[in-house]
Length: 284
Image (tube, rainbow, N blue to C red; front, side, top):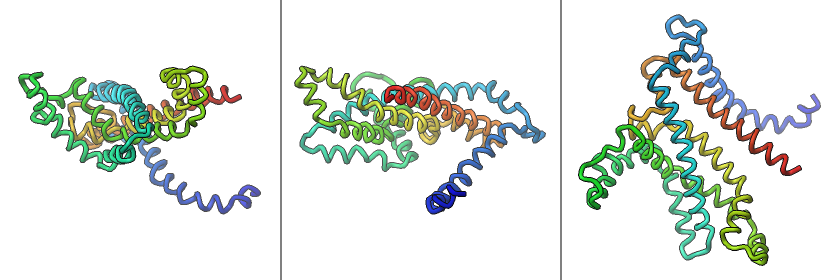
């Protein structure tokens, strides 16, 4: 009671947010978990949905595609974003202009960006036209028909859409590093590579970690781009759950959604137990 009397104003201010999260997030999640354990035919508690899920060939493909897109996509995005952030940190003419135009993809709706990139990577798109004019191909490859080439296209499309966010996170981390640190290392005779390896990367670790966590969570639940660009040719966990729901297989759809939620939770817990605990030990 003493705690309530002391912080009643703060609790009242947080209450609308808590009510919103409880009603629109926690309740749907609990209902999805409940549906995943109910047999659609008998409406009894059962594991038949998970048995059907793990034996479904499309689920195995969706799981592999989701993990592949996440791991490869994040690795490529972090490397490219770091290079661009290092360039944008430098002082040069037009830096403000380039910092502004790089944000444009973030303002484009995901569905619009997916449809736009269809004109690029479609069988009669600009990319095939460029390859043909350069003499690299004699026919028009179908990049969106499945396989690793389709995964590469989806990774590129996702990177084009969200790369500005990763750049902003890393650029903010770079801006927080004081110039006096680099000046002191220059006095000690450190070259550009040693400064990057022993100063920039260690001090940029929190920003890189945050970027990886945010992008991993977002990438695991990727939905619009694979659905718009490849349809059923490249299933991911989100599209698999959606299509099962469209076929009125609510239990199978709920089980797929629970597996996706479970993967995201595991990733977050790994971050807290590995990264946060390591940083806590280093700060002691």
